[in-house]
Image (cartoon, rainbow, N blue to C red; front, side):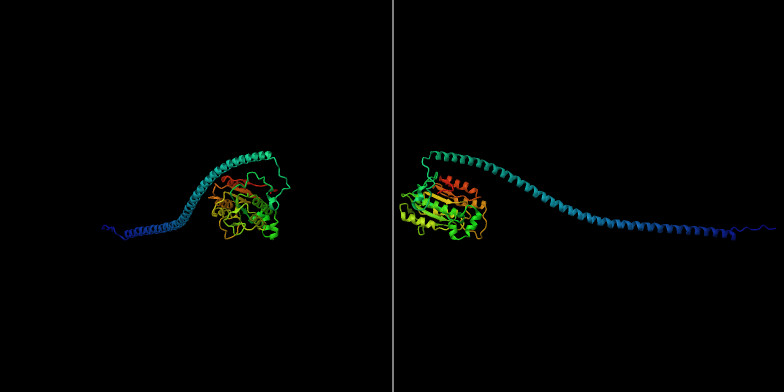
Length: 364
């Protein structure tokens, strides 16, 4: 019996091979599918991460813009604060300098006040000695009235009419109506008869009449009245000297003084200018006034309140250039509240070697 041939590549073997190959393909397909799913999942995760990062970038950019704005605002505030700090430092330095100047000025004023107190005390002592040495007391009944009896009261310490050419400067401004500003404003708008009867103005008139009556017979004189300007009491005598022996001219001057109305502001610079305008200058000036001037050489365009500093400035401008070789005797009828006036007029009289008098209320 013949041996049976065995076929290596039989149908069964091919089946096995095909099954194995199919299994490999199936396995590869399963693995490939799983890999695709995994890649898809990772891609989605990466996309989500990218979206999150993009949002963070957008949020970071927005925050960066806000930070930049905040930085710019901070820088601006820093510059402003630096500028303000510089201003405050400069202001502090200025205040320190002002404080130093104020302290120095205060010290100088205190020293000046102490010096003035000592001088006032010395004057009071001198006045007491003069009063004690007086042998004749003028009775109160001899008050200055009218006519030649005006010269009966002669006891004003230090004031003597002895010049060869005597110039009287008489203040006729509205402030001569009263010592109080409120009363002055009331009287300024009153009738002329009411103004003429004002006690202060009547007293000023008596002082002017006393001065006219006291002019020595051997002297020459002139009587100027002033407010915002200055003019002679007798019209037509501008710049002329009148003889003390001319009784008719003296009587005319007394009559003109009695009819003189007070009016206007006070310009001391225009009053003193009259002394410079005279061809032959005076050798004695007697100033009758009641306080510091209220204007300079020209009237202001608008009427306004003049404070103490401005009045002191007008006074300083008026006495600038005054001839100190000509004595200026001052008779002051002080106003209430005009504290600097006595000191400044006393200084003017002292600089020119004249007399300064604030007469008692019952004189003349």
